[in-house]
Image 1 (cartoon, rainbow, N blue to C red):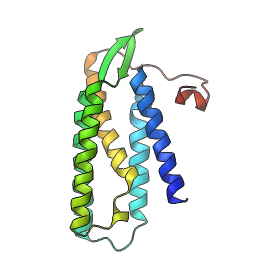
Image 2 (cartoon, rainbow, N blue to C red):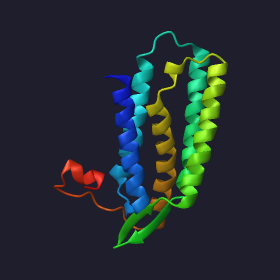
Image 3 (tube, rainbow, N blue to C red):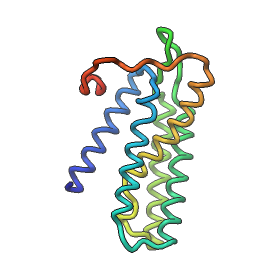
Image 4 (cartoon, rainbow, N blue to C red):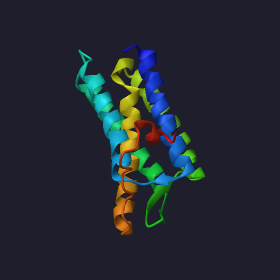
Length: 167
């Protein structure tokens, strides 16, 4: 797949998730876990296609993934998790976007540092960075949801795939 097309698809998925969460949406386990798992898996797959990476490269990749999870966890702590209609809902707040902006700056600085020390640009797949960030967010939101005692929202049965994107 063309790199630009791939990046465009990832951008569309991220924008859709952010818009849905900005408006507020029912919090169900599949929507919480699926995007970060899929994006992280795509990032790992992209890394597996790269040849010639050394131990230092994998060290930088692991450190970047750890930083991404940590920053996602901080972002997850800013998300409003609340009960509505007897089930959990989630909504991004202004603080969520502030943390996201700071996270982007920190990750850009980390990427520049990695490049300065010789990590190949193609050894930093964007889907891995986004995926681990959403994974950190999901871990915190999931923990808060489970601790609340309120049930997750049920899956929409018989929903069209387009309904998942807020059609």
